[in-house]
Length: 368
Image (cartoon, rainbow, N blue to C red; front, top):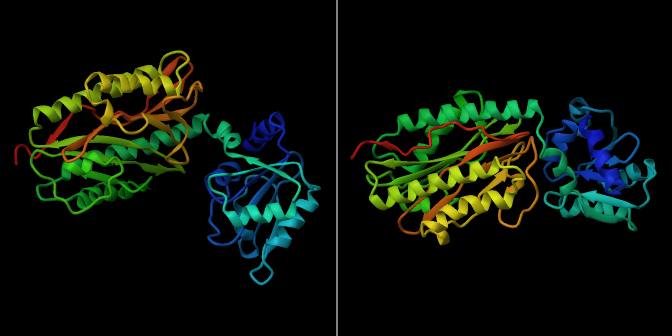
């Protein structure tokens, strides 16, 4: 089934009359339309039956029609008239006067929602995010192939960057090495590449700075690449010179937690909760439970973070075709951090780890 047909099947099952999507990854996933209209209103209106409609600035109509992967009716609007009439006309022409309307709770902006509410004042507005997530979580063979290509770019370029690290380089310069290698491969980073050296590694989402890599540091390096619209995500922690016994203990603990989480993901009936518990149990047993301060993993595909999530309390079964990360970490403020992240895909008989970059601790610069 096409993505549009699959969406409508889920809409029927959930008694949703219309789904509305704004520019972003969901719109691109469904229709192939992948541009932003910035501050101007644009939305794709998908009725349960009939030809979808798109409301957007008139100047964007040719681009939308060229990118669209299925027929749609365009309702354009100009800056001097505004979008309200176009939105109302689109719904009226489709015969939509109310009912249950699903919209994107996370990315739809207030002025877009207000335009829908003004056109359909008696409609019931519900969250479309779970609806579209049901489609996007299950990757096709083509999607998985694109993600594997993105992994190849990320891993090859990461190896090149690590090999080029020299004494005195700072976090920004290390990130630049990796980004240049990604771009040289014809790709772009899937998010801002992150390098946390020494105590900066104790912040899971550290912002790169000018701190130089120093002897004794553990350095957390996190990033990925985009290929054909799909992302990769990998984290490795390296050592500058011989690590201290405490650093080596922490590293080995995280490495064991990573292995435990990946093993749990392959078990029958695995859930986000069971994967998180398996990885977390290793860290708790080693006495660092309070230092593991985030979930064990997240789904990814078009976006770097999307369902499913490897987190306590998520009892949803991880089904074949779902892609996700396992990335336990230990963060010790004022000392260092360690995270080891891999990408996996659930299969019919288990789970495959898609990333293959070495997980053993790499030591650079000797004891410099």
